[in-house]
Amino acid sequence: MNEQHLEPLKRHPEGRALRAEVDLGRIARNLGRVRAAAGGREIWAVVKANAYGHGAVPVGRALAAAGAHGLAVSSLEEGLELRQGSIECPILVLGGLRPEALAAASAEGLTIALVGPEHLDDYARILPHHPVRLHLKLDTGMGRFGLLPSELGACLPQLERLAPWIEGAMGHFATADDPDQGFALRQRKVFDACLSQLSDAGIHPPQRHHGNSDACLRGLLDQDTHVRPGLALYGLTTLPEGRTLGLEPALELVAEVARVKAVSAGATVGYGRTFVAPHPLQIATLACGYADGYRRDLGNRAVVGFRGRTFPVVGRVSMDYLTVALPLDLPVAPGDPMILYSGDPATAHSLERLAQSLGTIPYELTCALHRRITRRFFPN
Ligand SMILES: Cc1ncc(COP(=O)(O)O)c(C=O)c1O
Image (tube, rainbow, N blue to C red; front, side, top):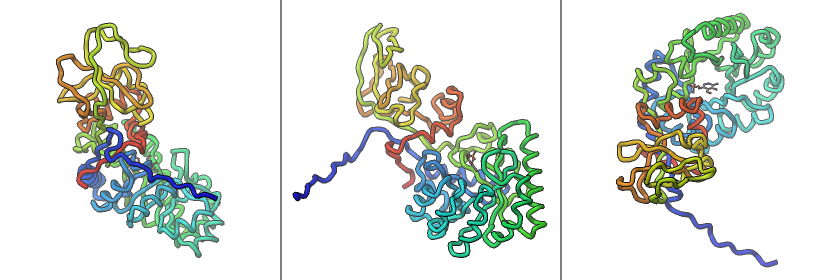
């Protein structure tokens, strides 16, 4: 049979003219600020979902180098990606793990959150052969993962068998961003009660952590030894305390102008003709669309930054493109960079302001940034 000879795949050195520029220096400085706000507690830096879209391996390396105790991810696959990127610090898999995957996790030295009562016997059987460190997740009020306080008593005999591997106990706040701290304080009480119950059974997890970014900013940390911030490390926040702390957004989304054209009054732009030029103007087309994670409902709503000013995104955002309206007399040419997400929180196209205008949170916008977007990291 004839072998098929394929030409090597051709690569375009520059790729698409769309890039997320990520300032690792800002992320390292944010780590220091969050640590100070958390009273110097050790940090499990949350880098799940590709470091909230910023790029898991480079960001993980920067955070480890800046002194994070460890990195927290959602799944085994995310943990393995960091190990493949030569990251050697502790890595905590927050989403738990089926017993069948324990051998793989052990081989890579991953730490696993124990998120329910289902597999405790399997864990006790497998861990002597494939040891991993465990963090016992307690459902103190989030209502997702974790042992409920009502389940804890019945599980204590199994947990005693697992005690040699239990390094931590953890919970997660549901309302750390709420000015009314009533529910958060109740969660803390439930956490304390669970820790006492464990302690009475001779289980003393050396690490205790319940706090995300907002809990660090709001001082909801009590006797915790560690914290688990994510969003604040990326310089984003939904709380005014974050700005007071000087958190610096670390990501800018930049797209180069692909085409510019002058249009006359009455011309329409894009699918559905939702934009009608009110007077003659220029339309710049940028190669960024909803397939990249730039939300379709930002069309006719958002602005982009260019030459120190902002200009409206007009018409519908399509899969690969969006269009910006500019005055006729403004010099603009293919290749000019425009800023879609700004790293300056005071601007109308900052992630926080855009998220607010969409009725969502900055997490959703950064996590949606597709892997096809080139990430450039500073300093390298
Ligand atoms: C279990 C857990 N811990 C910590 C975090 C970090 O939260 P934040 O990004 O709000 O700091 C998350 C984020 O979703 C999480 O799910």
